[in-house]
Length: 506
Ligand code: NDP
Ligand code: BG6
Image (cartoon, rainbow, N blue to C red; front, side, top):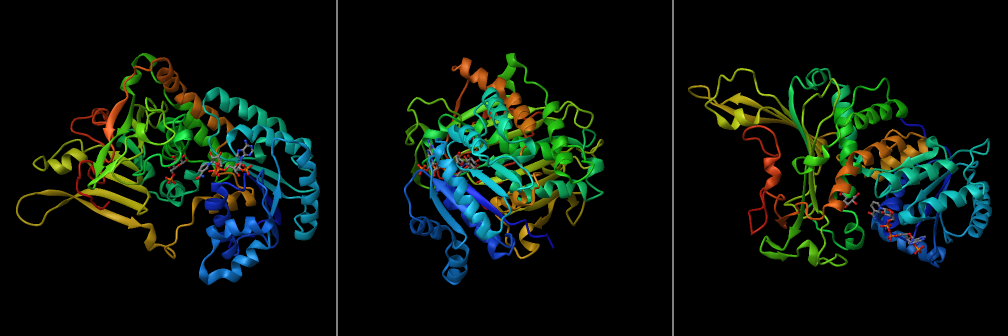
């Protein structure tokens, strides 16, 4: 049983926003219900909006209420406060500080604070600075201070580096928690357990046995109401630079010396440092970008990306991106890694597929289905979380007819079936002072450094191919030619939905 975290106060900046309402407060409430919150605690929401405590509570109730737990909700909300504050103005922090010391006394939090930055990224720097100027960043015998930074962490290599340098003037690296919610997903953490708690996988986990590695994060939704953010971001920045490279690092890393956060993050950093640089003159062979176009999905007209609100009608922002890369170290040598992600694909699925090499001598060549695909270990991140091993078995009867069969494990069969939301795990870890599942500054820099040549290339060559793909399809067809090897494609867990294709189960 995990020890309860120390008493503390969580201060949320940007508390009138969507993330607080939809993710942070529900996650904290869930921890509260499971008695994982500290014995005593306070949550202080701050934002520029003028809201009474009652107004603030009513907003939050939408996220946490459930007719069966009204009393529990009310009990939880007794710990939740609101303070109007413009995070850009230093004066307000003095008032914040004196409010906090009153609450610290009341909730016996002994000077322990988490500051959660859930504002637009443009104010992350000034909040850290103002907290320090108000004397709220220094750790002394008055308790610990931690700061959680939401994504996006920079928009390119140089802005991420400047943000890192700026934050490090006011907080040290051990106080900084850069959130990447993919690392909070149970199944992403299970990558470590699958690899390092079982004797059978690790001996095969290298260039001698693995043909290639595929990582997919597909979304069926479009950009929804986030056009103004997304049109300046695109799939490479939004998903690959952070979430999917972090997942790749867990797949590729060496065994850490311990489960200590520093030890694990040292190993993921080494992966980022070993990424082979893209050959800038041949980038089109390593990167594909696409943008969804108008189409029919299950009989309904779906908008093209350029028709979405707050999107430039001539936008060249990618809503699909696929990259191929190599990790130059002894374990991986020339094993290609492929990452693809996109919006308006046929379904929502994130998974890692380890494709093993085929046998050196093919005895059962008559069965193309098996010979072409070989063994696959599918690690399903979401939905339908689990692991699937595909291997060949003899079909009963005459001859040697080999068929691919599945051995599968589903997460829902383990435990009580409820998978905690990523924010629950990440918030609890931060309270416990465990940064394993948070991105370290050097790794964030290294990941930006890796994708920067692509961003530069697209910026300097607007004519570089941007392939249209019908909303509801698996992205541009050219993405298939990308995969090295005869007759080898991406894994398609579901058919195209564009042009009224048939919906299929995962
Ligand atoms: P919202 O726009 O819904 O909320 C932003 C919050 O910041 C509001 O409370 C707003 O309150 C405050 N704010 C807005 N502009 C300023 C400003 N110029 N100076 C100071 N405060 C400001 O955003 P979200 O809650 O969706 O997102 C918050 C952060 O989390 C963003 O950085 C976003 O990228 C990140 N994020 C969000 C996700 C989500 O699912 N929502 C997922 C992943 C990351 P007020 O105007 O009252 O001050
Ligand atoms: C966010 C991206 O970080 O991750 C979104 O900004 C994306 O564009 C989301 O939709 C995907 O997260 P999940 O947990 O739904 O896979």
